[in-house]
Length: 280
Image (cartoon, rainbow, N blue to C red; front, side, top):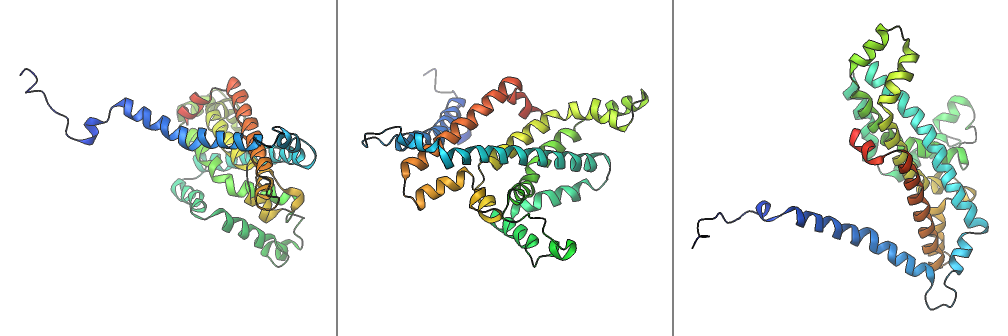
């Protein structure tokens, strides 16, 4: 037989083709992303109740509508504050210190601690008997307020902003900075004209990550805020566990997902996110 001497694949690696990998990826996406969304849409429509859009009408009115607006407002505010702190910290680590590894370890270490423990630690820190009040004599109204929620999310999500910004900033060729200095540019001019444009991909990636995480946060308003600071995740949980209104909870989930995907699509039309994540 002419096929007798052809090599026969024996290992799993040789048997797996790119087609298998694509099929696995699509199957995973369909099972854990598309299918849950379809289930949510089905539940939100309340099939069989005779009022398929009543849950959406309730979700887009009154308290629930304001909660959606508040969630994205908190997300935007947290993103702005976090990016400012992350950029300053990354610039310091990249250009002003030789102990980069130590600072990166300090950035990564909080990621090993559960969110609930971190938020409880922040709550204890700003409590009336905590060290912050002992030092300044007041908590400045951080606890159980909008400021407390935004501050808590900023602290919690700061590592997610630092890492991509640091990575893009650390990849800048030092010759560009040296050339800027040779041409007479000062430190601020160099940052504005050289460092900032070359690290923009990291800023965009960090901003997108922090915005998605913060706008859908559940623990921050639950631990550091009050009922007036509840975000959409808290209202979804409340609709399920307290009101037993599955249709409303599903409608809120669908609305949040649609708005978030629409914002990402609009953002992607101005900034190519594919290129951004390739460059960090």
